[in-house]
Length: 391
Image: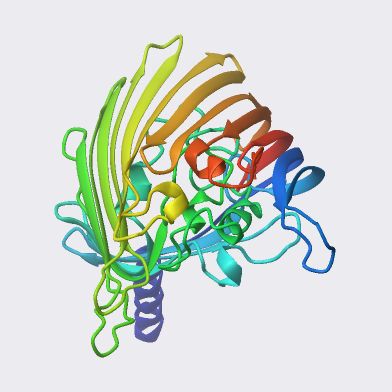
């Protein structure tokens, strides 16, 4: 009898310990069919006498992943260690639904891989590969939800050969590495990196609608005479009832040398209000290249800041939500870029959504003007229809 009671007590203890630890499997599958059109600069042939660079229109019908959100699967873990504290971790793997390949350049857990400690009183501290604090609030203004149809979305999936073509034609130097990459999207805004390796990130609890976050990435690429390319990001947010106001800052290092510390800085302010019959949002961003030199065709010197604005609205109509948005980026060196987008969402169930939309962007007119006469390589138009399912 005594042994039975001991065994039952042991089983009870094990069950209690198990109840204090959780592992959650989750995911999102998002695929769409698109009609995608862009104008591509075709360089002159080195083997054909008299050949000149031409602009050719390219239209493609294709299946793509991540129309509303990037497809993914992940694991969240949490162990209660008492005193209102828990050990937490998150592994999240991006995937391309159209090919089955891993996203984020083939990384196994490219979206997120972190572990740390959390408390309801002091917040959460994690280390590893994290989303930046700036990225966490980057779409607070976007009533279109930062989808591929949102003209201010700087992290959508439609990359083209336009940036490479611009660089090949001398439109913008690729030194330091990465300076051109942010132009390689069908969006009006310049863009930024959304995730960082080797980073530490802290997020406060929610204090009556107020919250904040900060992230530091070590870079870990220091060599004699050249400082590591560390990056820093932060946000501050107030969300209470129909009102949302947030701000974000990010400075991400580009490839550094012994004499220069090039970086891309973004400073963002968001505001949104839910009127019930409609939600409206506005975003204001300043993208600044530091120590990134423009070619002579663009006036030389450092690339001037881009001042960016986005306005959008979403109207719920039962199971359907209609949204529209406009975005612009303008600066003295690259010129202006403007985009427009519309989309419709239809909720099939709590977890499944049908969507359709269109977006067109034409931009960086001074950059385009520095290319051969008649160039229009940065005009992109996308039409699409798709399905998103979460689990």
